[in-house]
Amino acid sequence: MQVTTLHLQNFRNYAELTLDLSPSLNIFLGPNAQGKTNLLEAVYYASLTHSHRTRQDHDLIRFQQPAALLQLAFSRAGVGSRLDITIPVQGRRKLLLNGQPVRPRELIGTLNTVLFSPEDLALIKGAPAGRRRFLDRELSQASPAYYHELLTYNHLLQQRNTLLKEIREHRASPHLLDPWDPQLAASAAKIAARRQDAVQKLQALANTMQQSISGDAETLALAYEFHGAEETPTLASMVATENERTRSTAQADTTPAMNATEAVDPAVSGAPNVTHTLELWYNKRLEARRSLDILRGVTSVGPHRDDLALTVNGIDLRAYGSQGQQRTGALALKLAELEFLHEETGEYPVLLLDDVMSELDAGRRRALLAFLAREQIQTIITATDAAYFPKERFGTMFHVKDGTIIKDEKSAGTVANA
Image (cartoon, rainbow, N blue to C red; front, top):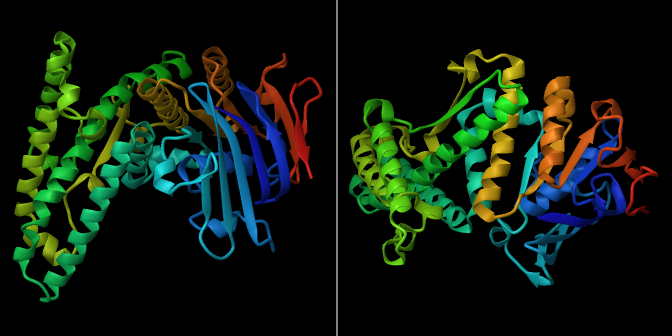
């Protein structure tokens, strides 16, 4: 998966820009506040239809301009495509894929990206919501079916929370929850089972990355934490046992008629037995906590409350990890996401690294750059100092100043600024 050309018009500080990108490493150098991150933001926006820096689309429009235009030419599995996004000051944005109108949800998974920026250190130190978003973004890009199920779950959750408030205010009967709870439990089970299965895959990938970046000095472990499972200590072990049993059965049985993936799409719900186990558990938990949920007016159990636990060398990374370990852990998670999407889709996503070099020591920088060069992953890197990179020719370099981009004379390709 590669972005071949990026065209911006009135996007952030770019009046007009046409940029051809290398299929390998693209390094954008320059002082802060010159427009480097805006380039990554544009590619990220095209991938997930929202910015990682603002919730307001109008923030992306150049000052006193009526609209911003974002165009990308990219290839996937050797097939070229074009995406056109118009973001107006007033009215709704317009999205075209190969000239045809599409809805935002239809674009998810079309152009996959993995972004790592200094703010992503919150993955380790921040609230559980950030780690849930990390898992959901990764799985949504790997599977449109998962993204659809996530939308379904969030809709059911919103409806149940609204009803809980009405019941608390004596404007509705508690019995009205009876048809909602089984639906919510079924959707919750699919989301949580798929997340837990993904975390097991990420575990091996992230640990490999952590060891590589740290010079084999650190071992990273991940675990999916079901909120409320502390009241049911056997839940995690039951889920792990069912996952292992499903994998063993799938490996032993190669006959088409008995292939488990034909019965249940694993991209949506994980192992069937795991999903069933979780559905029963969620139904019981929703029933047990109904009175408390009515009192609070919110649903207190479900994947919207779960978390991702991380340890390095057996120590809780969030609470006790050093700053260097936390930075490496966050980067290892992002690179594991890169490998996960590669395994799930057959192609590496585009990697976006925003000022990451300044957050790593020299040894970890060398290990990261060696990995990127070896795997030949299209990467867009922003940095303030060329000293972060090897002195020998390394990737295609651009210099950015006040919304103007100049390609290094030794680099091939074209860039045009208006």
